[in-house]
Image 1 (cartoon, rainbow, N blue to C red):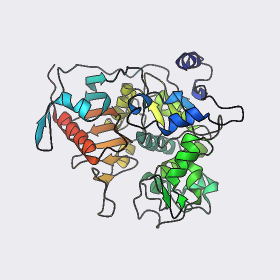
Image 2: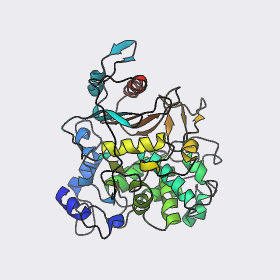
Image 3: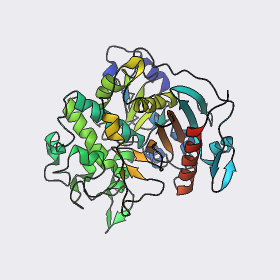
Length: 410
């Protein structure tokens, strides 16, 4: 797989449409039983330290190639991580690594790397899954599409771009509602059954993630309306999947191609990225709400791009003026909205504490944490157990706050 990828990316004739060789399917187009089993158990605590950086081995993918000059990240390595305080105890920085199931950690101060380590036999060229950090990337792409006049306004109705939404729970829902996770669609992320029927989360797991029989954005189209759009926060990867569908239609090209042209290459990423693909082999679209994969340093570059207000290497503007401000305009949670360890939500990103910092957050401990007040970017790629309680997330944020205030000693 890795050798095939290297050969593929060396073919420069079609860099924007390159993709990884698809997963091996049976003669009748089915995902083999053994691969389905790997997909079912990819998040298990006994496997996830490995699977979270090898998703291309078990899924069909869509590559986001890189080319051109690399955005240089200067460095001055610190001697040790900062201590932090959690649960009324002072803890050594090194203890944080194992206590919070860390696969890789990078800390930047004012654009300079001061700490970068891979753990558990990880390497610089490993591509780690972002899970829901992919949502924040989707919001960046929406901003670019606005700037390119491909989308008229985030107050446009999504059905303007995707007519298939007419008559569904997403009819009458704007792009803004989707960005804010306030579509009003009665969809459930959690797996299980309600009134004897599988939830949307269960259907996605069975039909999209495991078996590749459906496209992610098609699953919620039969849902009912739970409330008026804009009035109720309901964290939903389905809302982000609809955003991806809007982007695909507005740009009239695959999401990976659009991202390559307007974000990945201009921002000077040092390695390719890739999306997991949904649907049957060769026809699925990018799972933009939970399926992006990249290297540790390239996630750091995304964080730095947010910190600089969308300005990339050499002063090149990548995101339109004011878009990061809109993304980070946090709506505080009401008592009904409260999430453990979360204070509020912007456009596809979170506020985790009472500071000015904001974060892209992915399932089981993936973070890009940006603190504008201290010019700090922290990327933590983790392998939280599936049943990890809120304490591991709270301890992670306690370390982030300490690292943000930290003045590293060389």
